[in-house]
Amino acid sequence: MTVVDSFRQTVASNPDGPAVSCHGVRMNYREVDSRVNRLAAGLSGLGIEPGDRIAILSLNCHRFFELYYGAPLLGAVVVPLNFRVPPRELKYVIDHSGSRAVVVDPVLGDLIDPITAELDSVDHFLSLGDEPREGYILYEDLLRDAPAEFSPPPRSEDDLVGLFYTSGTTGEPKGVMLSHGNIVSNVENSNAIYERQQSDVYLHAAPMFHLADAATVYSVTANGSTHVFIPRFEPKTVLETISRERVTTVLLVPTMINFILQQPDLDSYDLSTLRQITYGASPIAPELLRRAMKVLNCRFFQGYGLTEASPLVTVLGPDDHVLEGPESRRLASCGKPAPGVEVRIVKDDGSEIRPGEVGEITARGRNVMVGYWQRPADTAATVREGWLYTGDLATIDEGGYIYLVDRKKDMIVTGGENVFSTEVEAALYEHPAVKEAAVIPIPDPDWGEAVHACVALVNGKSITEAELIEFCGKRLANYKLPRSIEFVAGELPKGGTGKILKKELRERYWANRERKIG
Image (cartoon, rainbow, N blue to C red; front, side, top):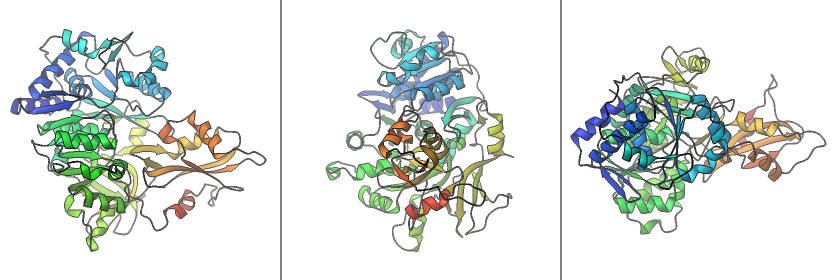
């Protein structure tokens, strides 16, 4: 089955069911189907062919939703773009993917304008706005002028749906190739456990370019449920929307949960329809989770996964969200394997760990990616004999619950965004006053983790914390910047091989605290 087949099944079974609500625009599934057909026909009329890539730079909206089905209907491949990175990183992704078209939300035009003339592979620029924009085709004009009927080319579950770029340790993003089979298997796996219903109203509060939310496009649609869109996360907007649209389910990263709980007028909103919250993509403090469970008074799911797994790997269900007693320790767990996913935690020699030991999480199933776009060596290193090596270290208890303890690649997860320490360190090392640098995560009440740099300076050189952060700001996206810098006299601690001991630097920040990633 393909994602298009899944969509068509929903249209056939629930044509008059409410499909989308977005800034006053409301459509049922029959109406969305008509627009998706016109979109595919319009793109075909531009010369876009099966296999061509279409980059999307947009805030959350129903048009983004339509692209997630219209492009695959044609056989094209979506390339969602992270609007939180600088133009030069967007250029890399567009160039590397060889995208033939770029679809742009005009609100984000400042990100694409500096690089437009340099994008050699791009033949067409489309605007999701309503006002004419020089050099752009208006999305609505494309749909209006396109034929109402479109005969899609035959598609296989092995064909690609999208390239979802994720940061690499070298700073160059890697395009995760996900097929129709990958996405459909994730729909089946997640819907087997997340208790979704056709009557659900799902709120897209997390960014749709991120697979955590993009995956819900397909799973929520498969149930014939309603999608509600807000452009981006704002605590007050989320609360207002839940109340107005009678939202029943939402996916939030812990930072979002924290900001919602901090709203002074939280009690004034009617959240009675909220049935369940799924959280993940970032560490969550146990005390924050406990408060959220008490205040929001609904069922909680934690999903652990990664883009390469489409993304779900493990789930901690509502029955394991226990506040008191010995079973409350499971709040620090990322749960058990999701249906349809095999999970093994292995040592370096490939043998499985026993309870109390630490190893790397590996996963196998139809959800595991095809590979990295144009990176065969990285693919071979990450997927071995069908097993996806996640780079996440974990332990397991006697009951089979998995507990993440660290990341092999020293990745920092701040506000749901992944930051690799090596990329930040590279920026720091560009400054002539920096002799040594090590970047580590430290606990942060708002963002889950914050980027913290430990720096030793060249003898005789000096620089302030503010100056060094400003220096990095010209080289890194804002969310990757160090939020604090600690200047260490002499040199940073090292092991016998001369490697900087990041664990030693982290210990005093995480003493008596559990670093949870879910």
